[in-house]
Length: 116
Image (cartoon, rainbow, N blue to C red; front, side, top):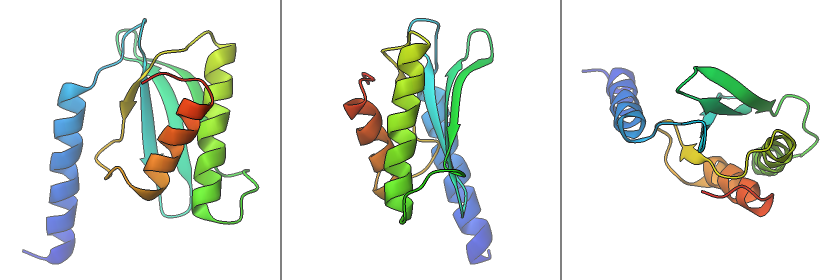
């Protein structure tokens, strides 16, 4: 098995395990995080209705390092969630390990006022 295929398979398994346990409702929507090579995306989703309630990405963030941009994404998602009337969410790391940029988004969202 090629290394790339093995890594993709491991990621898919982690993502499947996470999504089996995490689900968003109207009372506690899901804060989903996606990380590409260049940008980070966060969205708050109501899985019962299948609607995205709030969406933020790092394409226009001003931070110099990826970690600084991740912090800005977390702060911005918390601000937008508060304006939408959302205070409690369930965090979905999407198969990524909870370190670095993913952890920074979560910590900044907590500092912004989201509870999870």
